[in-house]
Image (cartoon, rainbow, N blue to C red):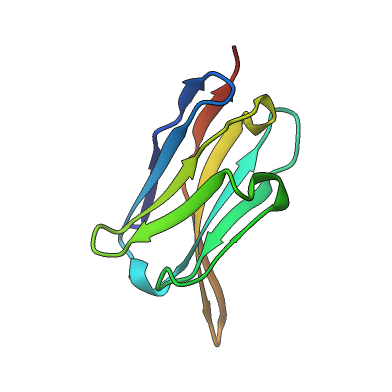
Length: 120
């Protein structure tokens, strides 16, 4: 059974930090690219950050560059999102996503999401 379970969300003051975790099981984690998305209240889901299967390559949406860091531990089947200098506009439900591109197409898994609220 495939599972992606996010944790680490919560309420934090502006300029604070949070570290999100996403624990994977039921699939070959180390072969999948991993991604974080978020969905602010009343808005569409948006991509935040990606990391290659080896962890050697990362990319970010411009709005979080220099503040967020994506990382992974393939031995623990876990991907992380370290979020620093948080802003109210970072308030959203954060989702982790696993993607494997094969010759047949894409295999995609989603977690259930974790709420991050940035407010004083």
